[in-house]
Length: 458
Image (cartoon, rainbow, N blue to C red; front, side, top):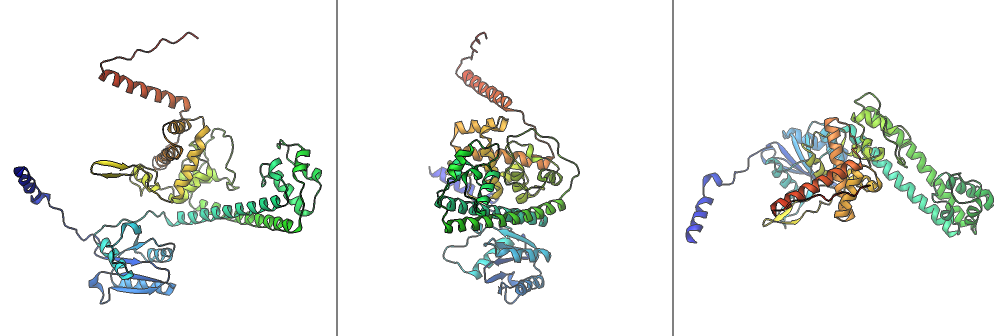
């Protein structure tokens, strides 16, 4: 035992096994601690008599920060992603020619008990000097504009949905059972009925005659469901909710025009996407222009050929990442950034957990919704999703299918290859062959042999 311990100690003291010392990777680095009212900036101690300074967050002071960093010969800056307060300073420094890294606050935690703004910016500067920080992914300037417009559109859709709820509440308070006869209150028939009610129409037969031919309910059933007590205060609430719904609709149309113009500035490819197979329905809240063609001209591939990916899902992903995914060396890096790959939590040689990391990634959320829509798809991806549902619980299966969608998108954008669906039968046959191969291997290890059963004559 003593001899083994001595041998282990002797091995640990070998010069070749010693830990390498840290080297200066970025000697001209600065660290900035972002705040709502003031920013604390730290530069290398030998560049100024006062290496840590506090600057207010006004625009003139942001320019003063850039001037001071230039005077201190700083070329790379690290800052924390604090709310949205970092955006003005980030954009200003980037426009002035600095290399700016936006780092995760959880990766730069200081020693416990030593928390202050001055120490935080100095700690950022030290970590950046030794190359211990990595910047978060941020797409190009034009893609950032598209991302802001698409997020603004999502906010408008949520606002419009709240006004729909206000209309439903006003109808319920008047005991107008619109949902019992018409499933969609914001569809063609629902909007006709609501606008007629606000205009003063109270005859149920007249309101029922406004229905579309695709509505299964009869005129008498709709007329019965549209009988209410018509209290003035509830009618006023319905009128205002309908007006707010229309106002947001005009804002959505204006936002769609801005998105179309921004997509045209990002076009790198000429041509039209090929025909795709007919699908059961289209995205309900999709923009009114030809979004599929615009995305094809931007990406040079048609992402909507992937089952489960519609135009809104494709734009949700592209607006967050852009068409150029060269910042991600491999597809594994891309899946990790999305938060769709299994986690690694191992201690003592034992895997504690493989749970995916928690991250509020809008592209990943869109891919999860697309994966959930594969439940009834008669495609290879649909068969894969149903197979995953049979092996694990639904949320894990959705994440696994979203991971596969992310890999397909990465391959199409990086290699320029079109996606071709092999079909549900192709996937099932490959699965059957894989299972048979595994069973044959197990049988051979046990000294047995699988014999196929004779098939009954049809």
